[in-house]
Amino acid sequence: MGLSTVQRFAHARTPEALFQGQWQDHPTKLDMFKSYLHQRWEDGCTNAWKLWEEITDRGYRGGYAAVRDYLRPLRTVPRTPAIRPPSARTVSSWILTHPDALPDEAQLQMKIALAHCPELEAPAGHLIREGVAAGRADDLPGLHGFANGLERDQDTVVAGLSIPWNSGVVEGHVNRIKMFKRQMFGRAGFELLRKRVLLA
Image 1 (cartoon, rainbow, N blue to C red):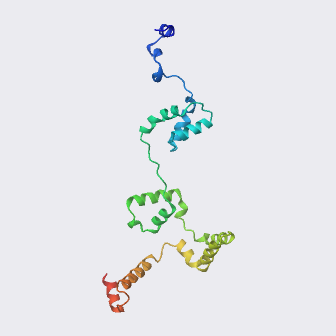
Image 2: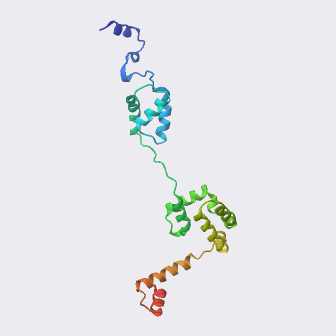
Image 3: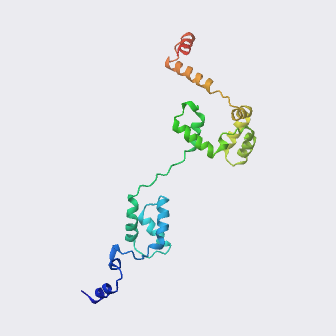
């Protein structure tokens, strides 16, 4: 037994003071960067090499292995999956679908979306003129054509954005009649088409 070991044993006040190596809770170069590592981990960055590069840029002078070993226990902790907000297309499809035809989960998500964006529920017919003017002011030819179309059908567009009624039922019947005509390859007369529509 060496002299330094004897001196360490002699000066130790508690058994814990004799522990060395990985069991000893001694300060490390990584200590001042641990809160940053945890924050980045919660943000979704779980690449140890990338995190090591980030804290190296912030002044860390230790090696990659220390960062990797420190992060290893965090990989066993289940993370709460991040909930992605619905896309604009998804929300549009919910709004354009009759509430009775939406699944319960979609109805709940739509209520949450409308709570976050109350302007989606508000009638917006009075904003058409402003929208047309803004579309013409932009340097996008496609938007100019769209603005011209809105202005041509301005009364219809304003009504569609302001009143609760729509022509969805009529459009549905028109599509159904067109489907019957396609199924009969255009060879059936009006009487047969009439019977199919009435009896379907």
